[in-house]
Length: 627
Image (cartoon, rainbow, N blue to C red; front, side, top):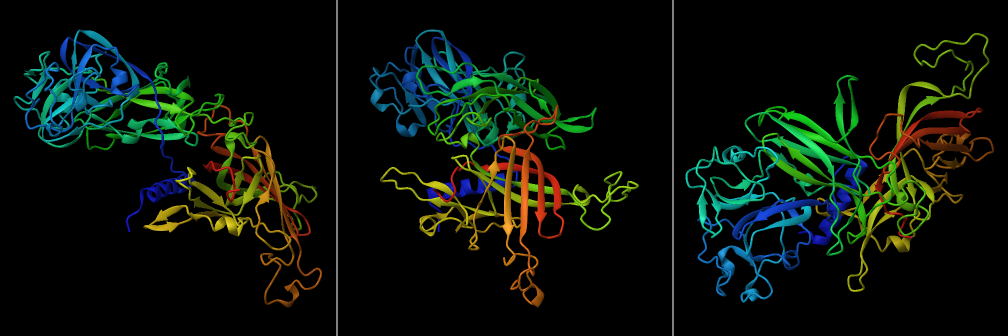
Protein backbone atom coordinates (compact mmCIF):
# COMPACT_ATOMS: atom_id res chain seq x y z
CA UNK A 1 0.00 0.00 0.00
CA UNK A 2 1.49 3.39 -0.92
CA UNK A 3 2.34 5.65 2.00
CA UNK A 4 0.53 8.92 2.56
CA UNK A 5 2.65 12.08 2.50
CA UNK A 6 2.10 12.54 6.22
CA UNK A 7 3.24 9.02 7.04
CA UNK A 8 6.21 9.39 4.71
CA UNK A 9 7.25 12.59 6.48
CA UNK A 10 6.96 10.87 9.84
CA UNK A 11 9.02 7.98 8.53
CA UNK A 12 11.77 10.34 7.44
CA UNK A 13 11.85 12.10 10.81
CA UNK A 14 11.76 8.80 12.67
CA UNK A 15 14.62 7.44 10.62
CA UNK A 16 16.71 10.55 11.23
CA UNK A 17 16.09 10.18 14.98
CA UNK A 18 17.64 6.72 14.96
CA UNK A 19 20.45 7.78 12.64
CA UNK A 20 21.41 10.49 15.11
CA UNK A 21 21.35 7.95 17.93
CA UNK A 22 24.05 5.95 16.22
CA UNK A 23 26.18 8.99 15.55
CA UNK A 24 25.68 9.51 11.83
CA UNK A 25 25.41 13.25 11.54
CA UNK A 26 23.33 14.77 8.82
CA UNK A 27 22.53 18.32 7.91
CA UNK A 28 18.83 18.60 7.46
CA UNK A 29 16.62 21.61 7.93
CA UNK A 30 12.91 21.85 7.35
CA UNK A 31 12.92 25.59 6.83
CA UNK A 32 14.83 27.92 4.58
CA UNK A 33 17.22 30.46 5.98
CA UNK A 34 19.32 33.16 4.44
CA UNK A 35 23.05 33.89 4.43
CA UNK A 36 23.24 37.16 2.64
CA UNK A 37 25.42 37.95 -0.36
CA UNK A 38 25.39 41.29 -2.12
CA UNK A 39 25.50 40.71 -5.85
CA UNK A 40 25.85 43.26 -8.67
CA UNK A 41 24.80 42.88 -12.31
CA UNK A 42 25.43 45.38 -15.08
CA UNK A 43 22.43 45.61 -17.41
CA UNK A 44 22.56 47.44 -20.72
CA UNK A 45 19.68 49.14 -22.48
CA UNK A 46 17.79 46.50 -24.45
CA UNK A 47 17.95 42.75 -23.96
CA UNK A 48 20.36 41.11 -21.51
CA UNK A 49 21.17 37.48 -20.88
CA UNK A 50 21.31 37.22 -17.06
CA UNK A 51 22.40 34.39 -14.77
CA UNK A 52 21.51 34.76 -11.08
CA UNK A 53 23.81 33.04 -8.58
CA UNK A 54 21.67 33.95 -5.57
CA UNK A 55 18.07 33.45 -4.56
CA UNK A 56 17.05 37.11 -4.41
CA UNK A 57 15.19 38.73 -1.54
CA UNK A 58 12.36 39.25 -2.11
CA UNK A 59 11.65 36.44 -4.55
CA UNK A 60 8.32 37.93 -5.64
CA UNK A 61 8.91 39.39 -9.10
CA UNK A 62 6.61 42.40 -8.68
CA UNK A 63 8.35 43.44 -5.47
CA UNK A 64 11.85 42.60 -6.70
CA UNK A 65 11.56 44.63 -9.93
CA UNK A 66 9.55 47.49 -8.45
CA UNK A 67 11.23 50.80 -9.31
CA UNK A 68 13.79 49.22 -11.65
CA UNK A 69 13.92 50.07 -15.38
CA UNK A 70 13.08 46.49 -16.34
CA UNK A 71 10.35 46.13 -18.95
CA UNK A 72 10.02 42.36 -19.13
CA UNK A 73 11.68 39.15 -17.95
CA UNK A 74 11.63 35.81 -19.75
CA UNK A 75 12.66 32.39 -18.44
CA UNK A 76 12.99 29.25 -20.51
CA UNK A 77 11.11 26.35 -18.93
CA UNK A 78 12.47 23.59 -21.19
CA UNK A 79 15.15 22.99 -23.80
CA UNK A 80 14.12 24.20 -27.29
CA UNK A 81 15.13 22.54 -30.49
CA UNK A 82 16.68 25.80 -31.74
CA UNK A 83 18.49 28.41 -29.68
CA UNK A 84 16.19 31.27 -28.71
CA UNK A 85 13.34 29.99 -30.86
CA UNK A 86 10.59 32.60 -30.53
CA UNK A 87 9.08 34.94 -33.03
CA UNK A 88 8.38 37.77 -30.61
CA UNK A 89 10.73 39.63 -28.30
CA UNK A 90 9.06 43.06 -28.37
CA UNK A 91 7.50 43.85 -24.98
CA UNK A 92 5.66 46.85 -26.43
CA UNK A 93 3.52 44.58 -28.59
CA UNK A 94 0.35 43.51 -26.67
CA UNK A 95 0.46 40.20 -28.55
CA UNK A 96 4.10 39.64 -27.62
CA UNK A 97 3.58 36.95 -25.01
CA UNK A 98 4.23 33.35 -26.04
CA UNK A 99 1.50 30.78 -25.49
CA UNK A 100 1.74 28.48 -22.48
CA UNK A 101 3.03 25.60 -24.59
CA UNK A 102 5.94 27.61 -26.04
CA UNK A 103 8.29 26.77 -23.17
CA UNK A 104 8.65 30.40 -22.02
CA UNK A 105 7.60 31.94 -18.72
CA UNK A 106 7.23 35.73 -18.70
CA UNK A 107 6.87 38.69 -16.35
CA UNK A 108 5.64 42.15 -17.27
CA UNK A 109 4.80 45.16 -15.04
CA UNK A 110 1.34 45.72 -13.58
CA UNK A 111 0.44 48.33 -16.19
CA UNK A 112 1.47 46.23 -19.20
CA UNK A 113 -1.30 45.31 -21.69
CA UNK A 114 -0.28 41.65 -21.54
CA UNK A 115 -0.32 41.48 -17.75
CA UNK A 116 -3.22 39.02 -17.75
CA UNK A 117 -1.06 36.41 -19.50
CA UNK A 118 1.89 36.68 -17.13
CA UNK A 119 3.07 33.32 -15.75
CA UNK A 120 6.40 34.13 -14.08
CA UNK A 121 5.81 35.29 -10.51
CA UNK A 122 8.87 34.08 -8.56
CA UNK A 123 12.54 34.69 -9.38
CA UNK A 124 14.99 31.99 -8.31
CA UNK A 125 18.76 31.73 -8.24
CA UNK A 126 20.77 29.28 -10.32
CA UNK A 127 18.56 30.23 -13.27
CA UNK A 128 19.12 32.02 -16.58
CA UNK A 129 16.79 34.85 -17.66
CA UNK A 130 16.27 37.21 -20.57
CA UNK A 131 15.68 40.74 -19.25
CA UNK A 132 14.89 43.86 -21.23
CA UNK A 133 15.91 47.16 -19.65
CA UNK A 134 14.78 50.61 -20.75
CA UNK A 135 18.19 52.04 -19.81
CA UNK A 136 21.58 50.87 -18.60
CA UNK A 137 21.89 50.45 -14.83
CA UNK A 138 23.60 48.44 -12.11
CA UNK A 139 21.25 45.99 -10.41
CA UNK A 140 22.17 45.38 -6.76
CA UNK A 141 20.77 42.02 -5.72
CA UNK A 142 20.82 40.74 -2.16
CA UNK A 143 20.10 37.09 -1.54
CA UNK A 144 21.19 33.64 -0.49
CA UNK A 145 23.61 31.58 -2.63
CA UNK A 146 21.51 29.42 -4.92
CA UNK A 147 21.22 25.69 -4.27
CA UNK A 148 19.88 24.70 -7.68
CA UNK A 149 21.77 22.25 -9.85
CA UNK A 150 21.58 23.12 -13.54
CA UNK A 151 19.70 20.53 -15.62
CA UNK A 152 20.94 19.96 -19.17
CA UNK A 153 19.10 18.36 -22.05
CA UNK A 154 20.32 17.23 -25.43
CA UNK A 155 20.08 20.28 -27.66
CA UNK A 156 20.14 23.96 -26.75
CA UNK A 157 20.06 25.09 -23.10
CA UNK A 158 19.77 28.61 -21.71
CA UNK A 159 22.38 28.52 -18.92
CA UNK A 160 24.99 30.47 -16.98
CA UNK A 161 28.26 29.58 -15.28
CA UNK A 162 29.64 29.76 -11.74
CA UNK A 163 32.85 31.69 -12.40
CA UNK A 164 34.88 34.39 -10.66
CA UNK A 165 35.87 37.50 -12.57
CA UNK A 166 38.30 38.49 -9.81
CA UNK A 167 40.86 36.47 -11.78
CA UNK A 168 40.93 34.88 -15.21
CA UNK A 169 37.68 33.13 -15.97
CA UNK A 170 37.82 29.74 -17.69
CA UNK A 171 37.17 29.27 -21.38
CA UNK A 172 33.86 27.75 -22.42
CA UNK A 173 35.62 24.60 -23.60
CA UNK A 174 37.60 24.04 -20.37
CA UNK A 175 34.59 24.74 -18.14
CA UNK A 176 32.34 22.32 -20.01
CA UNK A 177 34.97 19.70 -20.92
CA UNK A 178 34.05 17.24 -18.14
CA UNK A 179 30.44 17.23 -19.33
CA UNK A 180 30.06 17.92 -23.06
CA UNK A 181 31.99 18.80 -26.20
CA UNK A 182 31.21 22.05 -28.01
CA UNK A 183 30.98 21.90 -31.77
CA UNK A 184 30.52 24.58 -34.40
CA UNK A 185 27.44 26.81 -33.98
CA UNK A 186 26.78 25.45 -30.50
CA UNK A 187 27.49 28.56 -28.42
CA UNK A 188 25.69 31.93 -28.57
CA UNK A 189 25.50 35.12 -26.53
CA UNK A 190 22.39 37.34 -26.43
CA UNK A 191 22.59 40.73 -28.14
CA UNK A 192 20.83 43.92 -27.06
CA UNK A 193 18.25 43.35 -29.82
CA UNK A 194 17.74 39.75 -28.66
CA UNK A 195 19.65 38.49 -31.68
CA UNK A 196 21.89 35.47 -31.20
CA UNK A 197 25.58 36.40 -31.28
CA UNK A 198 27.76 33.40 -32.24
CA UNK A 199 30.78 32.81 -30.03
CA UNK A 200 33.51 31.54 -32.27
CA UNK A 201 36.35 29.57 -30.73
CA UNK A 202 35.13 28.00 -27.47
CA UNK A 203 38.71 27.10 -26.56
CA UNK A 204 39.74 30.78 -26.38
CA UNK A 205 36.51 32.69 -25.61
CA UNK A 206 36.02 33.13 -21.86
CA UNK A 207 32.94 32.92 -19.69
CA UNK A 208 31.53 35.87 -17.76
CA UNK A 209 29.90 35.86 -14.36
CA UNK A 210 26.23 36.82 -14.23
CA UNK A 211 25.78 36.28 -17.98
CA UNK A 212 23.63 33.66 -19.68
CA UNK A 213 24.25 31.91 -23.00
CA UNK A 214 22.65 29.46 -25.37
CA UNK A 215 24.73 26.29 -25.32
CA UNK A 216 24.12 23.17 -27.39
CA UNK A 217 24.84 20.01 -25.41
CA UNK A 218 25.45 16.53 -26.75
CA UNK A 219 24.19 14.87 -23.54
CA UNK A 220 21.64 15.28 -20.78
CA UNK A 221 22.27 15.46 -17.04
CA UNK A 222 23.13 18.00 -14.34
CA UNK A 223 26.35 19.99 -14.42
CA UNK A 224 27.62 23.15 -12.72
CA UNK A 225 31.33 23.19 -13.38
CA UNK A 226 34.47 21.08 -13.02
CA UNK A 227 34.00 20.78 -9.24
CA UNK A 228 30.92 18.91 -8.00
CA UNK A 229 29.46 19.77 -4.59
CA UNK A 230 26.91 17.60 -2.82
CA UNK A 231 23.33 18.87 -2.96
CA UNK A 232 22.96 18.97 0.82
CA UNK A 233 25.83 21.47 1.10
CA UNK A 234 24.47 23.55 -1.78
CA UNK A 235 21.22 23.85 0.15
CA UNK A 236 23.17 25.09 3.12
CA UNK A 237 25.85 24.20 5.64
CA UNK A 238 23.29 24.51 8.40
CA UNK A 239 23.97 23.91 12.06
CA UNK A 240 20.44 23.98 13.38
CA UNK A 241 19.55 23.53 17.04
CA UNK A 242 20.68 19.90 17.20
CA UNK A 243 23.36 19.73 14.49
CA UNK A 244 27.01 20.23 15.37
CA UNK A 245 28.72 18.63 12.34
CA UNK A 246 28.25 18.77 8.57
CA UNK A 247 29.82 16.62 5.85
CA UNK A 248 30.84 18.59 2.73
CA UNK A 249 31.67 16.43 -0.31
CA UNK A 250 33.77 17.80 -3.16
CA UNK A 251 34.59 15.89 -6.35
CA UNK A 252 37.01 16.86 -9.10
CA UNK A 253 35.36 16.15 -12.46
CA UNK A 254 38.22 17.54 -14.55
CA UNK A 255 40.94 15.59 -16.31
CA UNK A 256 43.69 17.35 -14.37
CA UNK A 257 44.59 17.93 -10.73
CA UNK A 258 42.78 20.79 -9.00
CA UNK A 259 43.90 22.79 -5.96
CA UNK A 260 40.65 23.66 -4.21
CA UNK A 261 40.42 26.55 -1.79
CA UNK A 262 37.63 26.87 0.78
CA UNK A 263 37.31 30.28 2.40
CA UNK A 264 34.85 31.52 5.01
CA UNK A 265 33.50 35.07 5.08
CA UNK A 266 30.85 36.72 7.18
CA UNK A 267 27.37 37.38 5.88
CA UNK A 268 26.30 40.71 4.46
CA UNK A 269 23.64 42.57 6.40
CA UNK A 270 20.16 41.10 6.20
CA UNK A 271 17.76 43.26 4.14
CA UNK A 272 15.16 45.10 6.17
CA UNK A 273 12.64 45.54 3.36
CA UNK A 274 10.44 43.71 2.96
CA UNK A 275 10.53 42.49 6.56
CA UNK A 276 10.70 38.84 7.50
CA UNK A 277 14.29 37.87 6.68
CA UNK A 278 16.26 36.22 9.52
CA UNK A 279 18.58 38.66 11.25
CA UNK A 280 22.35 38.17 11.36
CA UNK A 281 23.48 37.53 14.94
CA UNK A 282 27.16 37.34 13.96
CA UNK A 283 29.72 35.13 12.24
CA UNK A 284 29.67 31.33 12.39
CA UNK A 285 32.79 30.02 14.22
CA UNK A 286 33.78 27.31 11.75
CA UNK A 287 36.10 24.35 12.38
CA UNK A 288 37.27 21.55 10.08
CA UNK A 289 38.73 18.11 10.79
CA UNK A 290 42.33 17.83 9.59
CA UNK A 291 45.49 15.82 10.07
CA UNK A 292 48.40 17.49 11.84
CA UNK A 293 51.49 15.89 10.35
CA UNK A 294 53.77 17.46 12.95
CA UNK A 295 51.87 15.96 15.91
CA UNK A 296 50.66 12.97 13.85
CA UNK A 297 47.12 13.40 15.13
CA UNK A 298 43.76 14.47 13.77
CA UNK A 299 42.34 17.65 15.24
CA UNK A 300 39.79 20.40 14.67
CA UNK A 301 41.28 23.52 13.08
CA UNK A 302 39.76 26.98 12.79
CA UNK A 303 38.47 27.47 9.24
CA UNK A 304 39.28 30.76 7.58
CA UNK A 305 40.91 29.63 4.34
CA UNK A 306 42.13 26.16 3.50
CA UNK A 307 43.62 24.72 0.29
CA UNK A 308 43.89 21.05 -0.59
CA UNK A 309 44.52 19.10 -3.79
CA UNK A 310 42.13 16.75 -5.59
CA UNK A 311 43.60 14.34 -8.11
CA UNK A 312 42.35 13.71 -11.64
CA UNK A 313 38.78 12.53 -12.08
CA UNK A 314 38.24 8.87 -11.24
CA UNK A 315 41.50 8.47 -9.36
CA UNK A 316 41.97 7.87 -5.66
CA UNK A 317 42.00 11.31 -4.11
CA UNK A 318 39.65 12.94 -6.61
CA UNK A 319 36.94 13.06 -3.93
CA UNK A 320 37.21 14.80 -0.58
CA UNK A 321 34.78 14.59 2.33
CA UNK A 322 35.40 17.54 4.61
CA UNK A 323 34.03 17.38 8.15
CA UNK A 324 32.86 20.81 9.29
CA UNK A 325 31.74 21.80 12.77
CA UNK A 326 30.55 24.88 14.63
CA UNK A 327 32.01 26.12 17.91
CA UNK A 328 29.08 27.57 19.86
CA UNK A 329 30.92 28.19 23.11
CA UNK A 330 30.50 31.81 24.23
CA UNK A 331 27.82 32.64 21.66
CA UNK A 332 24.62 34.31 22.78
CA UNK A 333 21.21 32.80 21.98
CA UNK A 334 20.01 33.13 18.39
CA UNK A 335 17.39 30.89 16.81
CA UNK A 336 14.46 30.77 14.42
CA UNK A 337 10.88 30.01 15.30
CA UNK A 338 8.61 27.59 13.45
CA UNK A 339 7.93 30.19 10.75
CA UNK A 340 11.59 31.02 10.14
CA UNK A 341 11.56 34.32 12.01
CA UNK A 342 14.29 35.36 14.39
CA UNK A 343 18.06 35.54 14.06
CA UNK A 344 20.98 33.20 13.57
CA UNK A 345 24.70 33.29 13.03
CA UNK A 346 25.39 33.48 9.30
CA UNK A 347 28.21 33.41 6.80
CA UNK A 348 29.28 32.18 3.37
CA UNK A 349 31.75 29.51 2.25
CA UNK A 350 33.37 30.06 -1.13
CA UNK A 351 34.83 27.15 -3.10
CA UNK A 352 37.32 28.02 -5.86
CA UNK A 353 39.73 25.94 -7.92
CA UNK A 354 42.28 28.57 -8.94
CA UNK A 355 41.17 28.26 -12.57
CA UNK A 356 38.10 30.47 -12.50
CA UNK A 357 35.44 28.23 -10.96
CA UNK A 358 33.63 29.66 -7.94
CA UNK A 359 30.60 28.48 -5.98
CA UNK A 360 29.25 29.98 -2.79
CA UNK A 361 27.59 27.96 -0.01
CA UNK A 362 25.35 29.49 2.66
CA UNK A 363 26.32 28.82 6.29
CA UNK A 364 24.11 29.27 9.34
CA UNK A 365 24.11 28.28 13.00
CA UNK A 366 21.49 28.57 15.71
CA UNK A 367 22.16 28.76 19.44
CA UNK A 368 19.05 27.80 21.43
CA UNK A 369 18.40 29.87 24.54
CA UNK A 370 19.44 28.07 27.69
CA UNK A 371 22.42 26.10 26.38
CA UNK A 372 24.54 27.80 29.02
CA UNK A 373 22.00 27.00 31.71
CA UNK A 374 21.30 30.67 32.39
CA UNK A 375 18.54 31.55 29.94
CA UNK A 376 15.20 29.78 29.87
CA UNK A 377 14.21 28.49 26.48
CA UNK A 378 11.42 26.58 24.77
CA UNK A 379 8.17 27.44 26.46
CA UNK A 380 9.97 29.16 29.30
CA UNK A 381 10.45 26.02 31.37
CA UNK A 382 13.36 25.46 33.73
CA UNK A 383 14.78 22.88 31.32
CA UNK A 384 15.62 25.73 28.96
CA UNK A 385 17.27 25.01 25.64
CA UNK A 386 18.78 21.78 26.94
CA UNK A 387 15.51 19.90 27.42
CA UNK A 388 15.30 16.61 25.55
CA UNK A 389 16.44 12.99 25.43
CA UNK A 390 20.13 12.14 25.85
CA UNK A 391 21.52 8.73 24.92
CA UNK A 392 25.07 7.51 25.40
CA UNK A 393 27.34 5.03 27.14
CA UNK A 394 29.20 4.61 30.39
CA UNK A 395 32.62 2.97 30.23
CA UNK A 396 33.82 1.32 33.45
CA UNK A 397 37.59 0.89 33.76
CA UNK A 398 38.19 0.77 37.52
CA UNK A 399 36.87 -1.30 40.44
CA UNK A 400 37.74 -1.56 44.14
CA UNK A 401 39.23 -4.78 45.53
CA UNK A 402 37.07 -6.19 48.33
CA UNK A 403 38.71 -9.59 48.67
CA UNK A 404 41.23 -10.53 51.35
CA UNK A 405 44.67 -9.08 50.69
CA UNK A 406 43.41 -5.99 48.96
CA UNK A 407 46.58 -4.12 49.82
CA UNK A 408 47.79 -0.73 48.71
CA UNK A 409 49.87 -0.82 45.56
CA UNK A 410 52.71 1.27 44.26
CA UNK A 411 51.06 1.31 40.85
CA UNK A 412 47.65 0.55 39.32
CA UNK A 413 48.89 -1.73 36.57
CA UNK A 414 46.44 -4.68 36.48
CA UNK A 415 48.98 -6.82 34.61
CA UNK A 416 52.05 -6.20 36.78
CA UNK A 417 50.90 -4.75 40.14
CA UNK A 418 53.51 -3.90 42.77
CA UNK A 419 52.57 -4.16 46.43
CA UNK A 420 53.46 -1.36 48.78
CA UNK A 421 55.38 -2.97 51.69
CA UNK A 422 53.70 -2.80 55.09
CA UNK A 423 50.50 -1.22 53.78
CA UNK A 424 47.07 -2.10 55.15
CA UNK A 425 44.22 -3.42 53.06
CA UNK A 426 42.64 -0.85 50.70
CA UNK A 427 39.14 -1.98 49.82
CA UNK A 428 37.73 1.40 48.79
CA UNK A 429 39.91 2.82 46.00
CA UNK A 430 38.87 1.78 42.47
CA UNK A 431 41.83 0.35 40.54
CA UNK A 432 42.38 -0.03 36.83
CA UNK A 433 40.89 -3.13 35.21
CA UNK A 434 42.46 -5.23 32.44
CA UNK A 435 39.42 -4.62 30.24
CA UNK A 436 36.59 -2.11 29.97
CA UNK A 437 32.88 -2.71 30.46
CA UNK A 438 30.51 -0.53 28.40
CA UNK A 439 26.75 -0.17 28.90
CA UNK A 440 24.08 2.23 27.57
CA UNK A 441 22.63 5.07 29.65
CA UNK A 442 19.53 7.16 28.91
CA UNK A 443 18.81 10.52 30.54
CA UNK A 444 15.87 12.84 29.97
CA UNK A 445 15.54 16.50 30.98
CA UNK A 446 11.98 17.81 30.81
CA UNK A 447 10.74 21.36 30.27
CA UNK A 448 10.24 21.76 34.04
CA UNK A 449 13.91 21.05 34.73
CA UNK A 450 13.45 17.51 36.10
CA UNK A 451 16.17 14.97 35.24
CA UNK A 452 15.31 11.29 34.94
CA UNK A 453 17.27 8.13 34.27
CA UNK A 454 15.33 5.80 31.96
CA UNK A 455 15.70 2.12 31.24
CA UNK A 456 13.37 2.16 28.21
CA UNK A 457 11.92 4.80 25.89
CA UNK A 458 9.94 4.61 22.66
CA UNK A 459 9.15 7.25 20.08
CA UNK A 460 5.43 7.44 19.29
CA UNK A 461 3.19 9.81 17.34
CA UNK A 462 0.12 11.64 18.59
CA UNK A 463 -2.12 12.54 15.61
CA UNK A 464 -3.39 16.07 15.33
CA UNK A 465 -6.77 17.45 14.35
CA UNK A 466 -6.59 19.34 11.07
CA UNK A 467 -10.09 20.75 11.38
CA UNK A 468 -9.35 22.10 14.84
CA UNK A 469 -5.93 23.37 13.76
CA UNK A 470 -4.07 21.05 16.16
CA UNK A 471 -0.81 19.72 14.78
CA UNK A 472 0.43 16.21 15.45
CA UNK A 473 3.53 15.68 17.56
CA UNK A 474 6.09 13.10 18.54
CA UNK A 475 5.80 11.67 22.05
CA UNK A 476 8.51 9.95 24.11
CA UNK A 477 6.92 7.00 25.92
CA UNK A 478 8.27 5.16 28.97
CA UNK A 479 6.79 2.25 30.98
CA UNK A 480 5.15 4.87 33.24
CA UNK A 481 2.86 6.01 30.42
CA UNK A 482 -0.82 5.82 31.50
CA UNK A 483 -2.91 3.39 29.40
CA UNK A 484 -5.37 6.14 28.41
CA UNK A 485 -2.51 8.18 26.93
CA UNK A 486 -0.94 5.19 25.20
CA UNK A 487 -4.28 4.38 23.54
CA UNK A 488 -4.16 7.77 21.75
CA UNK A 489 -0.73 7.19 20.21
CA UNK A 490 0.47 5.60 17.00
CA UNK A 491 3.79 4.12 15.93
CA UNK A 492 6.30 6.90 15.44
CA UNK A 493 7.80 5.56 12.23
CA UNK A 494 7.44 3.22 9.28
CA UNK A 495 9.72 0.33 8.43
CA UNK A 496 9.30 -1.88 5.38
CA UNK A 497 5.97 -0.18 4.76
CA UNK A 498 4.61 -1.09 8.20
CA UNK A 499 4.10 1.01 11.35
CA UNK A 500 7.15 0.72 13.55
CA UNK A 501 7.87 2.16 17.00
CA UNK A 502 11.49 3.02 17.62
CA UNK A 503 12.75 1.81 21.00
CA UNK A 504 15.88 2.45 23.03
CA UNK A 505 16.75 0.61 26.22
CA UNK A 506 19.49 -0.41 28.61
CA UNK A 507 19.92 -3.62 30.57
CA UNK A 508 22.23 -1.91 33.07
CA UNK A 509 19.37 -0.29 35.00
CA UNK A 510 15.86 -1.26 35.99
CA UNK A 511 13.76 0.91 38.30
CA UNK A 512 10.66 -0.24 40.23
CA UNK A 513 8.41 1.09 42.97
CA UNK A 514 7.49 -0.85 46.16
CA UNK A 515 4.70 -2.57 44.18
CA UNK A 516 7.24 -3.83 41.62
CA UNK A 517 5.94 -1.47 38.91
CA UNK A 518 8.41 -0.07 36.39
CA UNK A 519 9.16 3.63 36.94
CA UNK A 520 11.56 6.33 35.74
CA UNK A 521 14.20 7.32 38.29
CA UNK A 522 14.25 11.03 39.22
CA UNK A 523 17.82 12.33 39.60
CA UNK A 524 19.23 15.16 41.67
CA UNK A 525 21.65 17.81 40.46
CA UNK A 526 22.06 18.98 36.88
CA UNK A 527 24.22 19.26 33.79
CA UNK A 528 26.03 22.20 35.40
CA UNK A 529 27.82 19.88 37.83
CA UNK A 530 26.68 16.38 38.82
CA UNK A 531 23.66 14.11 38.39
CA UNK A 532 23.08 11.58 41.17
CA UNK A 533 20.64 8.73 41.66
CA UNK A 534 20.02 5.71 43.85
CA UNK A 535 18.26 2.53 42.82
CA UNK A 536 17.19 -0.34 45.07
CA UNK A 537 16.86 -4.01 44.09
CA UNK A 538 14.88 -5.63 46.88
CA UNK A 539 15.79 -9.03 48.24
CA UNK A 540 12.70 -10.68 46.75
CA UNK A 541 12.96 -8.89 43.41
CA UNK A 542 12.96 -11.27 40.46
CA UNK A 543 16.20 -9.64 39.22
CA UNK A 544 18.06 -10.00 42.52
CA UNK A 545 21.14 -12.19 41.82
CA UNK A 546 20.80 -13.95 45.21
CA UNK A 547 17.39 -15.25 44.30
CA UNK A 548 17.45 -18.78 42.90
CA UNK A 549 14.36 -20.49 41.59
CA UNK A 550 15.52 -24.02 42.39
CA UNK A 551 17.79 -23.56 45.43
CA UNK A 552 15.92 -23.83 48.76
CA UNK A 553 18.49 -21.65 50.55
CA UNK A 554 17.80 -18.82 48.15
CA UNK A 555 14.03 -18.77 47.80
CA UNK A 556 13.97 -15.48 49.76
CA UNK A 557 11.29 -16.76 52.13
CA UNK A 558 13.40 -16.40 55.27
CA UNK A 559 15.24 -13.42 56.60
CA UNK A 560 18.84 -13.29 55.54
CA UNK A 561 18.49 -15.52 52.49
CA UNK A 562 18.47 -12.61 50.06
CA UNK A 563 19.89 -9.15 50.49
CA UNK A 564 18.72 -5.77 49.25
CA UNK A 565 21.15 -4.32 46.74
CA UNK A 566 21.61 -0.56 46.52
CA UNK A 567 23.36 1.23 43.69
CA UNK A 568 24.28 4.87 44.16
CA UNK A 569 25.73 6.42 41.01
CA UNK A 570 26.91 9.84 39.92
CA UNK A 571 27.62 11.48 36.55
CA UNK A 572 30.08 14.35 37.00
CA UNK A 573 30.17 16.59 33.94
CA UNK A 574 33.28 18.09 32.39
CA UNK A 575 32.16 21.69 32.13
CA UNK A 576 35.31 22.74 30.31
CA UNK A 577 36.99 20.90 27.44
CA UNK A 578 40.60 19.87 27.75
CA UNK A 579 42.81 22.95 27.15
CA UNK A 580 43.45 23.32 23.45
CA UNK A 581 40.85 20.68 22.60
CA UNK A 582 37.66 21.26 20.63
CA UNK A 583 34.83 18.76 20.55
CA UNK A 584 31.79 19.48 18.36
CA UNK A 585 28.72 19.98 20.48
CA UNK A 586 30.57 19.97 23.81
CA UNK A 587 28.17 21.03 26.57
CA UNK A 588 25.24 21.38 24.13
CA UNK A 589 24.27 18.32 22.11
CA UNK A 590 27.29 16.40 23.43
CA UNK A 591 28.11 15.93 27.13
CA UNK A 592 30.81 13.90 28.82
CA UNK A 593 32.44 13.38 32.20
CA UNK A 594 33.30 10.80 34.85
CA UNK A 595 31.06 8.00 36.07
CA UNK A 596 31.19 6.59 39.61
CA UNK A 597 29.03 4.06 41.43
CA UNK A 598 28.89 2.42 44.85
CA UNK A 599 27.17 -0.98 45.19
CA UNK A 600 26.15 -2.26 48.61
CA UNK A 601 24.56 -5.63 49.39
CA UNK A 602 26.57 -7.78 47.00
CA UNK A 603 29.47 -8.00 49.47
CA UNK A 604 30.02 -7.18 53.11
CA UNK A 605 32.10 -4.21 51.90
CA UNK A 606 30.79 -1.65 49.40
CA UNK A 607 32.02 -2.17 45.86
CA UNK A 608 33.11 1.01 44.11
CA UNK A 609 33.52 1.34 40.34
CA UNK A 610 34.55 4.22 38.15
CA UNK A 611 35.00 5.29 34.55
CA UNK A 612 33.76 7.80 32.02
CA UNK A 613 30.54 8.57 30.17
CA UNK A 614 29.30 10.46 27.14
CA UNK A 615 25.80 11.57 26.16
CA UNK A 616 24.36 12.96 22.93
CA UNK A 617 20.98 14.63 22.59
CA UNK A 618 18.84 12.73 20.12
CA UNK A 619 15.50 14.48 20.65
CA UNK A 620 14.33 17.90 21.80
CA UNK A 621 10.98 16.62 23.07
CA UNK A 622 10.79 18.07 26.58
CA UNK A 623 7.96 15.92 27.92
CA UNK A 624 7.58 12.25 28.72
CA UNK A 625 4.39 10.36 27.93
CA UNK A 626 2.83 13.47 26.40
CA UNK A 627 2.14 15.02 29.80
